[in-house]
Amino acid sequence: MIAILQPLVPHYREHFFNRLREQAPFDLYCYSRAEALQRQNLAAGSTSIKPLSAWSVGPFVLYNPLGFFKSDYKVLVLMLNFAHLSTWMILLLKPFLKQKVILWGHGISVKRYVQEEQQPSRLLKWMMQLADATWFYTAREMELWRQVMPGMNAVALNNTISEVERIIQQPIPDKALLREKYGIRGRRILIYCARFNETGRRIDLLLRLMEETDPAEYSFIIIGAGKYKPDFNGYTHVHDFGAVYDPAVKQELFGLADLYFQPGWIGLSAVEAMAYGKAVCTFKRSETVLQCVEYSYIRDGYNGLIFENMEECLYTLDEITDDEINTMGQQARRFVNEHLTMTAMVDNALHSLHAMNQ
Image (cartoon, rainbow, N blue to C red; front, side):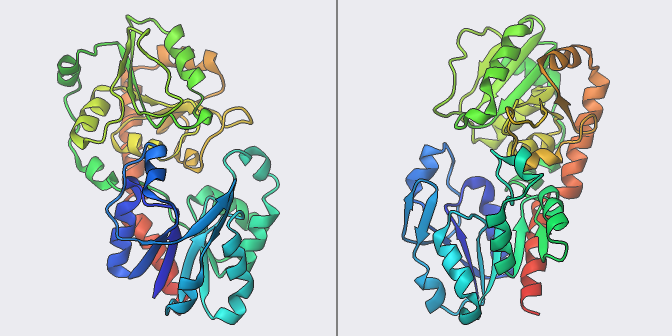
């Protein structure tokens, strides 16, 4: 038997758990309540879970691990998070528990990425040394850690979203027809689809782009809600659809757009955009522009555009041709099909779990 620990299960993760459970049965424990999903503007996934009592103070979490000890679990998949105090206890007691532990996480802090890619966290290193294996979200972070721990037992799951295979199987819609339907007819249409729940998304740069582009030439589609969402009513070329969970509507809105644009904190939204055949535009990771680990999926000039500054952004968006945009969009969808399917993510996890039983 296997036990997996997570705070909660959002909609974009449900297919991973449901499909993994079909081939490797497990119990999924969640320590956050349903209200946490609402606070983060997330929809709940349809996955059976076991609630787990926990207490938190700031970033530190103390969950009740007794259920893991009482049941016949041979493998525990816990979170690679040094603020999880109970995980430290399990790791330190592991020689006496006769259970194998896999740690699953980013492997690096999004907020301290620039520093930690040069000097990885000592606490995370200690955790991984105590564990039997590590699941990284992407290959980039696994490569960084293998420079520090060459012999580590690790796999990159290639983090992706639940609906990705359905999205890439959809035919390319008629862009002109959709623009007529929604009344959005700018020469260059950019779409943003992410929650406004994190200041690191650099919405100030999104607003600056809106202010410095010609409303007669550019249009923006906004999908998303959240406490940091600005008022877009003053922008005539901005079309705000709020939170959208209807896949048919999403497909049409992405279908009529040319490019995906998100200035910072880009994560799984990059996967979704590329699956819809949109090249991803963002800014280079720095100490002031934070990016999530999925940023490594973007290859500048191939399936997206990574700008050094706003001046380069404005110039490139003005000069890029429709043919270049279409080529990058096709390559973006191909990249997802080759590397970021849910089948591949589940298979990567299964390979690691099977190795635990050998």
